[in-house]
Amino acid sequence: MTVRYELHDKLETPETASEKPRRNVLQAMLRGAGNRCMNCGKGKVFDGFLQPHYACSVCGEEFHHHRADDAPPYFTITIVGHIIVPGLLAVEVLWHPALWIHMSLWVPLTLILSLSLLRPIKGALIGLQWALYMHGFDPNAEDDTPPIPVPSERVT
Image 1: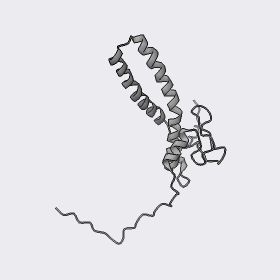
Image 2: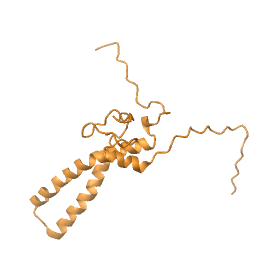
Image 3: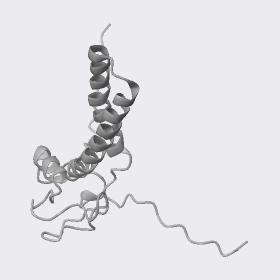
Image 4: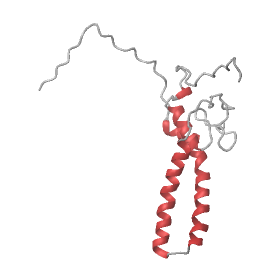
């Protein structure tokens, strides 16, 4: 079986997108995980525990349009589960402790790990989105936020 491709002169080559400067993905993710601006490395990303600033106070890079959504909790649960479950099983197999010892050990450890990893993971995901020009971080992209619906004239 032979496959033959025919090229026609009438086909146009697609226009290449304007080259944007490459951003260092690892550096952006590490800066985001450390609560530092991905662009300058000096300003802070988060205002509260998980609420990002609108923009960097030093360089003005905007953070408000990130789309981390459910990814930070998902990755946090995955990482914490891969730490807690093998630890729990190892302790049970080796020492067979009472249930109250398991509860007093693993519940607080799970909460501490979850709360301590959630913010750096969200910062790293925002840094990843910034480095790859995803969502609103691309200056040439169209706005991907849905339009605000106009309220109906009829009020029921």
